[in-house]
Image 1 (cartoon, helix red, strand yellow):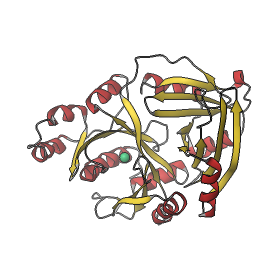
Image 2 (cartoon, helix red, strand yellow):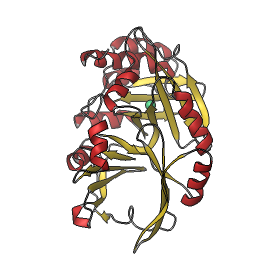
Image 3 (cartoon, protein in one colour):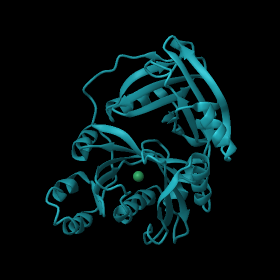
Image 4 (cartoon, rainbow, N blue to C red):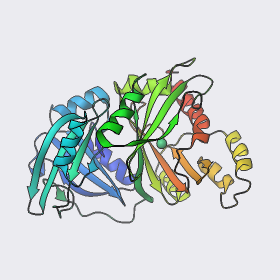
Length: 350
Ligand code: FE2
């Protein structure tokens, strides 16, 4: 996942010190790049690339329009040329056709297709490459022992305009062969004031999940509309990182100054009743950490949401621990959205 940041160096530092990522590779002036610099950060199976502009360029224009934001959700494919041609034949927005990059470690083939807003998907074939990251990057010796237990990207959520959710859901169905895992209507996802609709698209393996949200009319402004207003159109709303111990991950993140949404105590009174028959879930402890709990027919899940991590009220992160459940915490939506709306109210945008 590639993030564009106004200044990539301090943003990369934040992901290292607060979120426990290690820098594994770098590209910039020292490696012969003239217009952008990129820090490649890794934690277990998660790779984040933070890129900034060294001079006026498409990257700086993207940042001027959207603020610090996600540009690229890259997907590994077995054959980049075939993936691109098939996608475009099925209606994908072609951005950059198949091309090769190589260095002494081998060859990487890639192509780029568009999705909602100015977001893109790089299709990347790296079976012929043995280097650390990509050609053009130099390896950085990673510092050890600072991780917070984040393992893989669980899902990446996009916010799109009113009436556009179905269009983008069918785009993923047509172009990538994804299927609709679950659909939340505005009657399921609403508070007293505002509403949204959501559809989760996923690939055949279930490893790649892209929920899509659109605002729904309510008494006041939907949180999705606030995002669209400040981001300047559709874009990535949040990235969920999976952990195998949310209590440990969240304790460490809090120690390092990451701010999470506050959930009222009443939520935990009710959660204690819902989980009375599940003694391994320590609701008291989760309450102290502010972690949300939901269950479905397959098991349960634990999740928590950061406040926006950029200046604009746009991009945030979720930490999720799955104990059987493959869902998205529908039972938590109301508590979560009320918490989001309290923050939105503080910003004067509700
Ligand atoms: Fe999520």
